[in-house]
Image 1 (tube, rainbow, N blue to C red):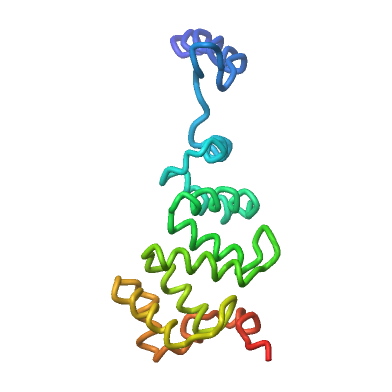
Image 2 (tube, rainbow, N blue to C red):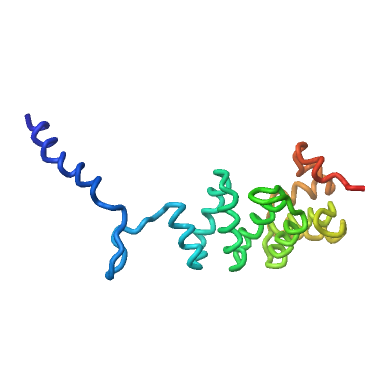
Length: 183
């Protein structure tokens, strides 16, 4: 009997929840602002809020297949100096995710991240130089960048060094055609 009485008391609360909007904006501000959603992240990015958490959300956005949205987020974050976003822009450009494949643009993003001191950027730009993808081939300069990434502790760079800079060590078989020389 007590359970029935409690259920009858709580029933109106459930019905009221459907009538309360998710957020309300008025002259006093926003009541119940949307939080922890992609809409909120993208609104923040559009307003120039490229915080670490907003920029990191790009990983989940691109992994969910929303590459155009991820590009907007990563580009804004990269332009504000977030080197991880630069490396993600390189990955999107290199693989044609959300736009046509563009090796030159990919190498440009990798170079920016490398110049900013990012170990992943150094590794990626080193690979670009060693392959001559999106940039004039320069194996010595590429190896030097891989070495810098390894010195910074990047495991994949150490693995490439240990393999005598054999690019097959870090290139999936599926990408062999993409990285094959054009001549």
